[in-house]
Image (cartoon, rainbow, N blue to C red; front, top):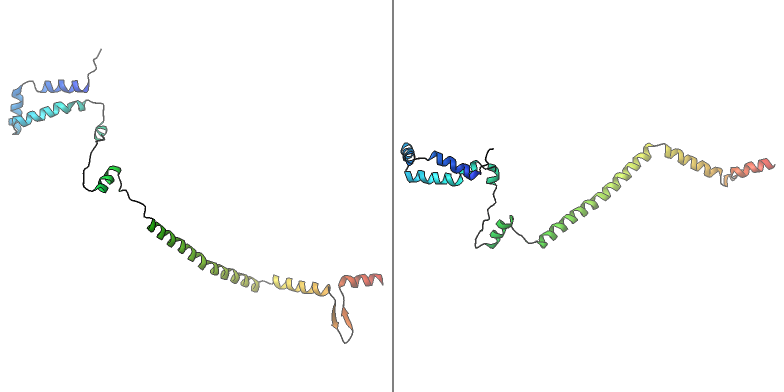
Length: 176
């Protein structure tokens, strides 16, 4: 049955296998023209962090670690802005009021200017419709004819011809 090794133990075994002799360290330092102490510090750094190679953590998980950073400055506003991600500003009531009143005034002026224009356009369209339509002329003639047929009046005063409503004239003719 295979034994499960931790990432740290895997790294330790691999480094131990690489650095069996100190002669190898001094030969490698000579080969790359670096000091033995510098190469030794690199080896110790590798020993400290090599377990990450065998770790299940992804590289993006390692780079997304959150660090607690403290900022000190004489400017308290700057420190607050960095800590909270934005500069804290108070409400500027005067500016908000000024722009609100200006916006409302612009809307009112627009509406007041729009009302006479719409009335003019409506009246102009109605006048055009009346001028171009014979329907209203026919209606007017029918109204005048009905008024004449249903009212009393003088047709020719010198000849003694008078007008009576048509319903009365029919009733009179039927009764005679």
